[in-house]
Image (cartoon, rainbow, N blue to C red; front, side, top):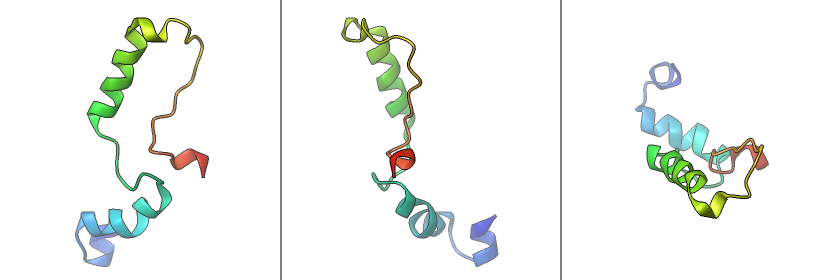
Length: 62
């Protein structure tokens, strides 16, 4: 992997390589997905139909 190849910690590779590509500058947490799933199960989402949702910290919109 890239960390071993560079001889650095995985966190350093995330900071140098991956985070610059993600506008929120962080990886997703399981809570991010769980929160959205709970929203979809709530009455607030009753009009949401047929959607493909990307939960990626903004990676795909740049």
